[in-house]
Length: 386
Image 1 (cartoon, rainbow, N blue to C red):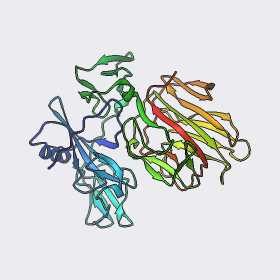
Image 2 (image 1 turned 90 degrees about the vertical axis):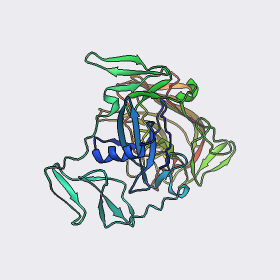
Image 3 (image 1 turned 120 degrees about the vertical axis):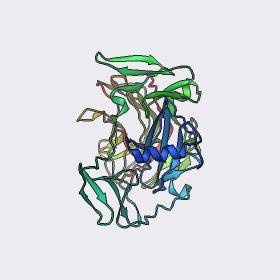
Image 4 (image 1 turned 120 degrees about the horizontal axis):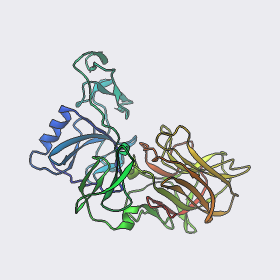
C-alpha cells in the first residue's frame, strides 16, 4: 500500500477526526505501517470520501478515522479532502440502506440517494449494529470506540514556533518542543515538522482577488462558483461564491483575524454572510455578514467560542455602494472589530473558537445566501494585528 507522508504544521488545516482506542483500526494501521514507522495517510477500506491517518509517535501507534465534508472526497494526490470532481471517487453506496463501520461494532452509516450519508450513527451503549437486520441489537461485549478528550482541553499551540502551552492544576504553562519538532494539535504531542518561516505559519489565507482567486500563502485550491473579476476585485452575484475546502474543520484557536475590503449592493434579502465557516447544515463559529441590508445596512462580526452558550457579536452601521476595509478577530482574551482602521468595539472574553466541520467560503455557503457586491485583499491569519 502506498504511503503518503503527512507531517502536520503548527497551523493545522485538517479534517473531522476521531482518535479511536479501537483494536480493528490499530490493526489496519499496523498492516499499512509494517514496512515503515512514520506517520502516513491511507485510503479508507469502505469509503472513498474518508481516509485513515496512522500516527507513530514515541513508539505508540495512534489511529485517526477521518471523513471529508459533504460534496468532498479524499484526494490521494493532495492528501486532503477535495471536491469529488477532482478525484476518482464516485461516492456510490454499494450496500443496503445501512451498513456497519468496518472499525467499530456500534457505529454505522446510511445510504442517501445512492451515496454515503456523511454523518455516522452510533448505537446505544452495549449494543452493536447488526447489518443483516439493519438495526442495533443487544451485545454487552460491544463498548465501541473511546473518544479521546479534545486536545484543546489540556494543550494548545503557542505563537512561538516550536513551543506549546500545557495546562496543569495551576494554569497554562508554556513549554518547548525538541529541536526540529513542533506541536501537533491532533496528537497533542511534539512531532517532526516541515520548516517554515514565521510569516507563513501565521498566515492561513492570502487572496488578493484582483484578477483571479489564487491563494498565495499555501497554494490552497479554491473552488470558484461563478465569481467574476473586474475593477480589481471579485464580483459576487446571487448564487456565486468562493469555497476553500482545505479549511474544513480548521482549529483556529484563540488567535485569528479576518481582513478584507468589501463593497455591498442592494440584495434580494436583508441578511446574509460575506464570509463564513458554516454552511446550510452546520452553524458557523466565525462569520462576517450584513443585516438590514436594504434599509439600515449593518455589518456584523460573529464568533462562537468553546464553553460559551452565547456567541460574541459586534455590529456597526455601513452604507450601500461604498468600499470599506474591515478587520475582525480575536487575540488572547480580546475580540475586536475595525472598520476603515477605526476600532468599533472590543469585548473581553476567554475561550478558543469552536471547530466547525465545514469549509470556509466567501459568498455562497449554500443556496440561501444572497451576497451581492465585491471583495478584495482577503486574508486570514492566526497572528492578529493588535
